Length: 118
Image 1 (tube, rainbow, N blue to C red):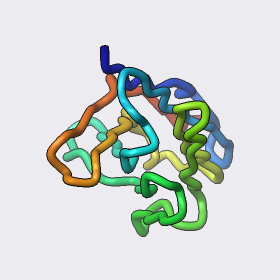
Image 2: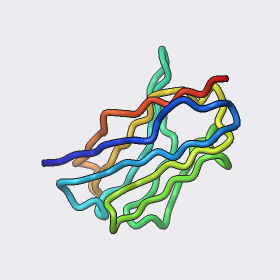
Image 3: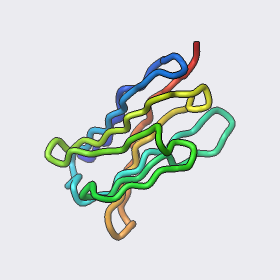
Image 4: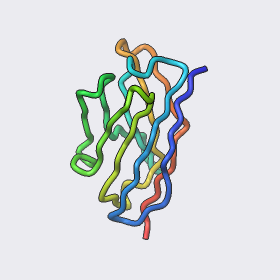
């Protein structure tokens, strides 16, 4: 049974930090690239960061570059998104997506809410 489960969201003050986790099971996680997306109320889903299947290549949206770090531990079948210097505009539901090298197979998690507010 394929599962992709995000965790680690919550309420944090501006300037604070959170680390999101994406736990995968039921497939060979190390064969899949991982992407974090987010969707704020009334807005379209946007890409936050991407990491290659082996973890050697990463990409960040301009809005998160320098503040967020994407990583993965294939031995633990888990990916991460470390978020520092959080801003109110980072408030959104954050989703983990995994996609195989062909792009034909992809799985989504259910999302985790991140709220940045004082």
